[in-house]
Image: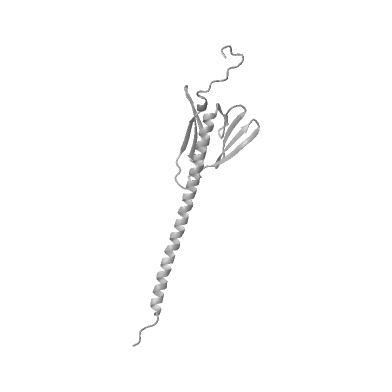
Length: 174
């Protein structure tokens, strides 16, 4: 009998079946990796946005001389006259408006994690006033994944602690 020079039909079916299983597993693994990458990218973007918000908010509170609220979703920080900074909570973001009198100098929009809302708390103590920005899950709307409360605290007017007012011409000691 001469040596065989080909494959049988059963051998070809087995090879094709094994190849199909390996290809199917590779496609599932690739889909899982892409989904994981998207989640990681969203998390990194949200972390960067919240870090920028924290830095900006703390700087504004430290530089402010006073804070006021017109309603539960808008807070105004008085800076050196006539400059003001307004934080306004929206459904999915926190908007920061920097004004010099009536002129809008800068507007920023910080996207909040899905299923969260921003609020502000002012704690007035005899020695200092602390302003807190709180990003917390909305109780009525369960988030798609676990979201924890985030709180940024800053002392109001901390940049002015050692600032002495300019002596006025009417001041007899000045």
